[in-house]
Amino acid sequence: MTQENKFVINQRHLEKVECLYLKGYLDAHTSPILESALETLVKDGKNNILVNFRDLDYISSAGLGVFMAFIEDVREAGGDIKLTDMQQKVFSVFDLLGFPMLFDIEKEEKTAIDKFNSNEERVSD
Amino acid sequence: MLKKTEHSDLLTQGDLSELERIREFIIVKANTFGFSNDIAYKIALAVDEACSNLIKHSFKFDSKKTISISIETERNAFTVIISDYGNPFDPNNISSPNMKEYFEHFNRGGLGVHIMKSVMDEISYIPSQNNDSSNKLILRKFIN
Image (tube, rainbow over all chains, first blue to last red; front, side, top):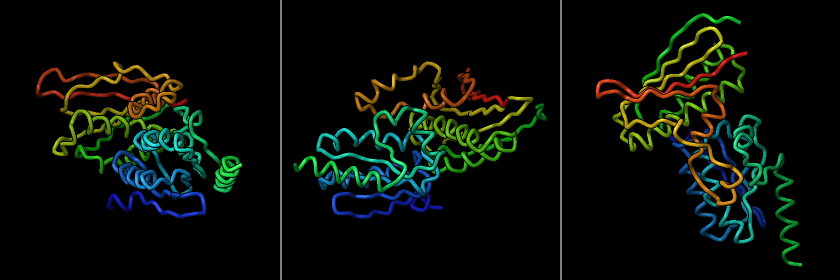
Protein backbone atom coordinates (compact mmCIF):
# COMPACT_ATOMS: atom_id res chain seq x y z
CA MET A 1 0.00 0.00 0.00
CA THR A 2 1.37 3.43 -0.87
CA GLN A 3 1.71 6.33 1.52
CA GLU A 4 -1.12 8.08 -0.34
CA ASN A 5 -3.51 5.18 0.26
CA LYS A 6 -2.62 4.90 3.92
CA PHE A 7 -3.69 8.46 4.53
CA VAL A 8 -6.06 10.50 2.40
CA ILE A 9 -7.42 14.03 2.78
CA ASN A 10 -10.60 15.16 1.08
CA GLN A 11 -11.30 18.86 1.13
CA ARG A 12 -14.58 20.79 1.06
CA HIS A 13 -15.02 24.52 0.92
CA LEU A 14 -17.93 26.07 2.77
CA GLU A 15 -18.70 29.77 2.72
CA LYS A 16 -16.47 30.66 5.67
CA VAL A 17 -14.83 27.37 6.55
CA GLU A 18 -12.36 25.01 4.92
CA CYS A 19 -13.09 21.41 5.86
CA LEU A 20 -10.48 18.65 5.73
CA TYR A 21 -11.71 15.06 5.95
CA LEU A 22 -8.99 12.69 7.13
CA LYS A 23 -8.99 8.99 6.31
CA GLY A 24 -6.59 6.22 7.28
CA TYR A 25 -3.52 6.39 9.50
CA LEU A 26 -1.83 9.60 10.64
CA ASP A 27 1.67 8.70 11.83
CA ALA A 28 5.26 9.86 11.31
CA HIS A 29 5.14 8.44 7.78
CA THR A 30 1.96 10.15 6.62
CA SER A 31 1.87 13.36 8.71
CA PRO A 32 3.81 15.41 6.07
CA ILE A 33 0.72 15.10 3.82
CA LEU A 34 -1.44 16.84 6.44
CA GLU A 35 1.27 19.38 7.15
CA SER A 36 1.39 20.30 3.48
CA ALA A 37 -2.41 20.63 3.25
CA LEU A 38 -2.59 22.91 6.31
CA GLU A 39 0.38 24.95 5.13
CA THR A 40 -1.37 25.62 1.82
CA LEU A 41 -4.56 26.78 3.57
CA VAL A 42 -2.73 29.06 6.00
CA LYS A 43 -0.58 30.57 3.22
CA ASP A 44 -3.79 31.34 1.32
CA GLY A 45 -5.13 33.18 4.37
CA LYS A 46 -7.77 30.53 5.05
CA ASN A 47 -7.76 30.47 8.83
CA ASN A 48 -11.16 28.96 9.63
CA ILE A 49 -10.22 25.30 9.39
CA LEU A 50 -12.35 22.33 10.38
CA VAL A 51 -10.72 18.90 10.50
CA ASN A 52 -13.14 15.98 10.43
CA PHE A 53 -11.65 12.76 11.88
CA ARG A 54 -14.60 10.43 11.18
CA ASP A 55 -12.61 8.07 8.95
CA LEU A 56 -9.26 8.43 10.72
CA ASP A 57 -8.34 5.15 12.41
CA TYR A 58 -5.06 6.08 14.06
CA ILE A 59 -2.99 9.05 15.22
CA SER A 60 0.44 9.24 16.85
CA SER A 61 2.34 12.20 18.28
CA ALA A 62 3.61 13.04 14.78
CA GLY A 63 0.00 13.78 13.79
CA LEU A 64 -0.65 15.80 16.94
CA GLY A 65 2.48 17.82 16.24
CA VAL A 66 1.10 19.00 12.90
CA PHE A 67 -1.80 20.75 14.63
CA MET A 68 0.60 22.31 17.15
CA ALA A 69 2.60 23.73 14.24
CA PHE A 70 -0.29 25.83 12.94
CA ILE A 71 -2.66 26.62 15.80
CA GLU A 72 -0.81 29.72 17.04
CA ASP A 73 -0.60 31.41 13.62
CA VAL A 74 -4.19 30.56 12.77
CA ARG A 75 -5.53 31.99 16.03
CA GLU A 76 -3.39 35.11 15.75
CA ALA A 77 -5.02 35.67 12.37
CA GLY A 78 -8.45 35.48 14.01
CA GLY A 79 -9.25 31.92 12.97
CA ASP A 80 -9.15 28.50 14.55
CA ILE A 81 -8.53 24.84 13.82
CA LYS A 82 -11.54 22.93 15.15
CA LEU A 83 -11.46 19.15 15.33
CA THR A 84 -14.61 17.04 14.98
CA ASP A 85 -16.11 13.54 14.73
CA MET A 86 -13.25 11.62 16.35
CA GLN A 87 -13.51 7.91 16.95
CA GLN A 88 -13.07 7.18 20.65
CA LYS A 89 -9.70 5.51 20.13
CA VAL A 90 -8.35 8.59 18.34
CA PHE A 91 -9.83 10.99 20.90
CA SER A 92 -8.18 8.95 23.67
CA VAL A 93 -4.74 9.87 22.25
CA PHE A 94 -5.59 13.59 22.24
CA ASP A 95 -7.02 13.20 25.73
CA LEU A 96 -3.99 11.26 27.02
CA LEU A 97 -1.83 14.33 26.42
CA GLY A 98 -4.35 16.96 27.48
CA PHE A 99 -4.94 18.34 23.97
CA PRO A 100 -8.55 19.26 24.79
CA MET A 101 -6.99 22.05 26.93
CA LEU A 102 -5.80 23.80 23.78
CA PHE A 103 -7.99 22.56 20.94
CA ASP A 104 -11.72 22.89 20.37
CA ILE A 105 -12.78 19.27 19.84
CA GLU A 106 -16.44 18.85 18.90
CA LYS A 107 -18.46 15.68 18.56
CA GLU A 108 -20.20 16.91 15.42
CA GLU A 109 -19.09 18.92 12.44
CA LYS A 110 -22.22 21.07 12.55
CA THR A 111 -21.37 22.40 16.03
CA ALA A 112 -17.94 23.51 14.85
CA ILE A 113 -19.35 25.18 11.72
CA ASP A 114 -21.98 27.00 13.81
CA LYS A 115 -19.19 28.25 16.11
CA PHE A 116 -17.17 29.53 13.16
CA ASN A 117 -20.27 31.31 11.81
CA SER A 118 -21.25 32.85 15.16
CA ASN A 119 -17.67 34.04 15.72
CA GLU A 120 -17.75 35.66 12.28
CA GLU A 121 -20.94 37.52 13.20
CA ARG A 122 -19.43 38.74 16.48
CA VAL A 123 -16.34 39.99 14.65
CA SER A 124 -18.44 41.94 12.15
CA ASP A 125 -20.78 43.46 14.80
CA MET B 1 -5.28 -15.27 34.78
CA LEU B 2 -2.11 -17.24 34.06
CA LYS B 3 -0.74 -16.98 30.55
CA LYS B 4 1.46 -19.43 28.77
CA THR B 5 4.99 -18.20 28.10
CA GLU B 6 5.33 -17.25 24.42
CA HIS B 7 7.81 -15.47 22.18
CA SER B 8 7.34 -13.73 18.80
CA ASP B 9 9.70 -11.71 16.62
CA LEU B 10 9.43 -9.13 13.86
CA LEU B 11 12.43 -7.78 11.97
CA THR B 12 11.82 -4.58 9.97
CA GLN B 13 13.76 -2.00 8.05
CA GLY B 14 14.29 1.25 9.93
CA ASP B 15 11.87 3.08 7.69
CA LEU B 16 8.76 5.08 8.63
CA SER B 17 6.75 3.12 6.03
CA GLU B 18 7.14 0.06 8.29
CA LEU B 19 5.25 1.66 11.19
CA GLU B 20 1.89 0.31 10.09
CA ARG B 21 3.22 -3.27 9.92
CA ILE B 22 4.82 -2.85 13.36
CA ARG B 23 1.53 -1.64 14.86
CA GLU B 24 -0.44 -4.49 13.30
CA PHE B 25 2.04 -7.01 14.71
CA ILE B 26 1.72 -5.52 18.21
CA ILE B 27 -2.09 -5.26 18.11
CA VAL B 28 -2.54 -8.90 17.04
CA LYS B 29 -0.18 -10.16 19.75
CA ALA B 30 -1.66 -7.91 22.46
CA ASN B 31 -5.21 -8.97 21.56
CA THR B 32 -4.18 -12.63 21.57
CA PHE B 33 -2.62 -12.13 25.01
CA GLY B 34 -5.95 -10.86 26.28
CA PHE B 35 -5.76 -7.08 26.21
CA SER B 36 -8.85 -5.13 25.10
CA ASN B 37 -8.75 -3.43 21.70
CA ASP B 38 -8.25 -0.10 23.48
CA ILE B 39 -5.18 -1.26 25.43
CA ALA B 40 -3.76 -3.14 22.41
CA TYR B 41 -4.09 0.09 20.38
CA LYS B 42 -2.29 2.07 23.10
CA ILE B 43 0.59 -0.44 23.32
CA ALA B 44 0.94 -0.24 19.52
CA LEU B 45 1.03 3.56 19.87
CA ALA B 46 3.85 3.35 22.44
CA VAL B 47 5.86 1.03 20.17
CA ASP B 48 5.18 3.30 17.17
CA GLU B 49 6.54 6.27 19.15
CA ALA B 50 9.66 4.32 20.16
CA CYS B 51 10.33 3.19 16.58
CA SER B 52 9.59 6.63 15.09
CA ASN B 53 12.13 8.16 17.49
CA LEU B 54 14.70 5.51 16.58
CA ILE B 55 14.28 6.06 12.84
CA LYS B 56 14.40 9.85 13.09
CA HIS B 57 16.91 10.54 15.85
CA SER B 58 19.13 7.47 16.05
CA PHE B 59 19.13 6.18 12.47
CA LYS B 60 18.80 9.68 10.91
CA PHE B 61 16.45 8.09 8.35
CA ASP B 62 19.05 5.53 7.22
CA SER B 63 16.65 2.75 6.19
CA LYS B 64 19.49 0.24 5.83
CA LYS B 65 19.46 0.03 9.62
CA THR B 66 17.03 -2.48 11.09
CA ILE B 67 14.73 -2.75 14.08
CA SER B 68 14.07 -6.07 15.76
CA ILE B 69 10.90 -6.33 17.83
CA SER B 70 10.40 -9.26 20.18
CA ILE B 71 7.33 -9.94 22.27
CA GLU B 72 7.57 -12.08 25.33
CA THR B 73 4.51 -13.01 27.34
CA GLU B 74 4.67 -14.62 30.73
CA ARG B 75 1.93 -14.87 33.34
CA ASN B 76 0.39 -11.39 33.49
CA ALA B 77 3.22 -9.50 31.69
CA PHE B 78 3.32 -8.49 28.04
CA THR B 79 6.85 -7.37 27.18
CA VAL B 80 8.01 -5.69 23.97
CA ILE B 81 11.78 -5.60 23.38
CA ILE B 82 12.92 -3.20 20.66
CA SER B 83 16.52 -3.85 19.60
CA ASP B 84 18.68 -1.69 17.36
CA TYR B 85 22.30 -0.88 16.53
CA GLY B 86 21.87 2.89 16.36
CA ASN B 87 23.12 5.52 18.78
CA PRO B 88 21.97 4.68 22.31
CA PHE B 89 19.03 6.70 23.60
CA ASP B 90 17.48 6.04 26.99
CA PRO B 91 13.96 7.50 27.18
CA ASN B 92 14.14 7.36 30.97
CA ASN B 93 16.57 10.29 30.77
CA ILE B 94 13.84 12.45 29.24
CA SER B 95 11.49 14.11 31.70
CA SER B 96 7.84 14.42 30.77
CA PRO B 97 6.77 17.93 29.77
CA ASN B 98 4.39 20.06 31.81
CA MET B 99 1.56 20.02 29.29
CA LYS B 100 0.08 23.33 30.49
CA GLU B 101 3.40 25.08 29.72
CA TYR B 102 3.77 23.02 26.54
CA PHE B 103 0.48 24.41 25.23
CA GLU B 104 1.14 27.96 26.48
CA HIS B 105 4.34 28.03 24.42
CA PHE B 106 2.79 26.22 21.45
CA ASN B 107 5.62 23.70 21.57
CA ARG B 108 5.92 20.94 19.05
CA GLY B 109 7.46 17.49 19.24
CA GLY B 110 8.96 15.68 22.20
CA LEU B 111 5.71 13.90 23.08
CA GLY B 112 6.66 10.38 21.98
CA VAL B 113 8.48 9.49 25.19
CA HIS B 114 5.67 11.05 27.23
CA ILE B 115 3.18 8.79 25.43
CA MET B 116 5.35 5.72 26.04
CA LYS B 117 5.54 6.52 29.75
CA SER B 118 1.81 7.23 29.97
CA VAL B 119 0.81 3.99 28.28
CA MET B 120 3.29 1.39 29.56
CA ASP B 121 3.69 0.15 33.15
CA GLU B 122 7.49 -0.26 32.99
CA ILE B 123 10.19 1.07 30.68
CA SER B 124 13.82 -0.02 30.92
CA TYR B 125 16.79 0.43 28.65
CA ILE B 126 19.99 -1.52 28.11
CA PRO B 127 22.47 0.38 25.92
CA SER B 128 24.87 -1.44 23.62
CA GLN B 129 27.97 -2.56 25.55
CA ASN B 130 30.13 -2.91 22.45
CA ASN B 131 29.76 -2.91 18.68
CA ASP B 132 28.42 -6.46 18.65
CA SER B 133 25.50 -5.99 21.01
CA SER B 134 22.32 -4.08 20.34
CA ASN B 135 20.55 -1.42 22.39
CA LYS B 136 17.42 -2.81 23.97
CA LEU B 137 14.35 -0.81 24.93
CA ILE B 138 12.04 -2.92 27.07
CA LEU B 139 8.38 -1.88 27.34
CA ARG B 140 6.16 -3.83 29.71
CA LYS B 141 2.41 -3.80 30.30
CA PHE B 142 0.59 -5.94 32.84
CA ILE B 143 -2.86 -7.38 32.43
CA ASN B 144 -5.25 -7.49 35.37
